[in-house]
Image 1 (cartoon, rainbow, N blue to C red):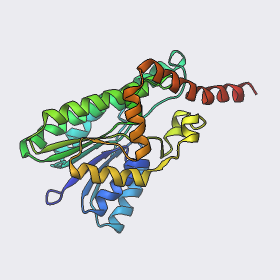
Image 2: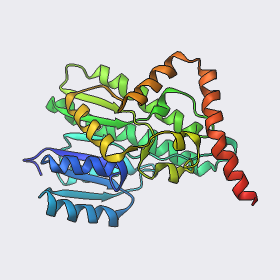
Image 3: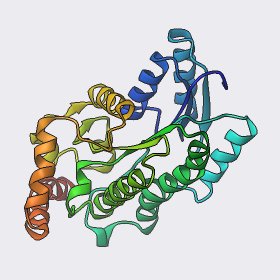
Length: 271
């Protein structure tokens, strides 16, 4: 794999991660794909090898486990794989009242969305800086720009990703390494169903972007070296509005929008 550019993508088995993997393979990158779903990763490897003649290394790893990032980096080192592009795409969330959420689930969200992302960036960035070349794409969200009642930890985790990514992007100016933060709105990737927010007004009224469109936009902006990438005029407008509206007002709006989903779930549970 040393003669080709290599992209490492977490959360690569579906959604935006899968579509990004496909784009990198299409553009002659070799891949290191990370996900808990080993069987799905092997399917993708076989498909890409046939369709794009791309070499794909699969690493089945649960990023919610404390040593996952170090284990991934150790495997890369042992296989002498140089990562030219790091895509921290993996992320999870949960919908509900923070006080009612399970302790383990809250810990998993923070471990995957914050800790694993930070550790992988730390471990892989050093080599990029030494080579004076490299690209990092951290997947944030529109959720990064306002508090999110009923998804408090998820929203807060994305605010961390946003702040962290913009800060190191500034630090890395002149090194040959760029950091791009992708801030998509609700996307057709299965995420809303996973977290239980598929019936929220936010999900129902927003014209969901396709994972393919978001990935194509992200790929273009990453290679252009853009620091913040917000796909679509509507999403960009939301970000600007969030900066103007007081946080208390913004949080109240999000709460009202999310409560429709919460109340509907309560009705279904009672019935």
